[in-house]
Length: 390
Image (tube, rainbow, N blue to C red; front, top):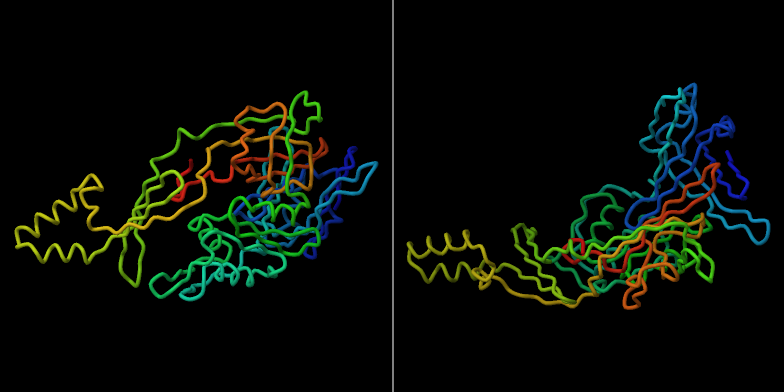
């Protein structure tokens, strides 16, 4: 099945499971493809389905191969070729004008991997990422593993557990280790991936889309505008104090961690139960009761800080909390991870050069009205080490 429009834009859907030659071109409404860091690529093929035929033909579980691009009158074709996806959670609607729509939702389920329970207690954190990417079929030549904590070694006391799918496991580890993770397919349909510090995300964009950077221009830019519209927001006042506590099971025992983010350092306080036991031994029965009451009723961390040990580590800059959503003319080379800069027509704060601006998510939408690409751009560190959005 192929859809063209007057701008030379096209998309093509093929399948070994579905006979797409039975789909009439006039029934095709649109194709939407969503690409986002730490998420499986997904999208929707929308069809007019007046006799509810397509909902029977294109069933959940069917594998599809999607290509889309632009064939300009002058110059080479720009194309994204044969993205493998699976029909997943389709739906539809009957509209007030009598039209029946089938929304064939799909996702790149081939990158989900297998559910498993594994314990990693040797090697390094970088070795864990490499092991999972091996299982997902990403060769060493098609991936970049480069993040600050990748050389940290594991032991029986610091082992890491996997209790979900391979993809979800990497998403969780990327969040805990403050790395950017994405997996997709390059122009030859080979799997590619990155698990990197945020200032290195352009690797995945170059592998998938062919570009690693783009400059946005708006309005009457002398260099020519490529941004149709945009909106932005400053989330800096939503920043939490950067303090949080979590309980982690270590060797079958609960361990309490309290994290404080300050400037460019993270201070972690780890509870040492032996310190409580030691102080209990110096008290009589009444004194022990008083100590436990004081500990459980403490409202300020300073009241119990003596029972914790401090560990300070340096982190990357925490970011500004700025986000910008923009709509551009359609471009298959636009993908999550692309580094961005801003030219004419944008507020001064988006001209800051002390941080890396990058595209966190992209939405490609092709219909008979044309091809448009929507992007969300953030600075490199929009989330703190505690997972709280800055």
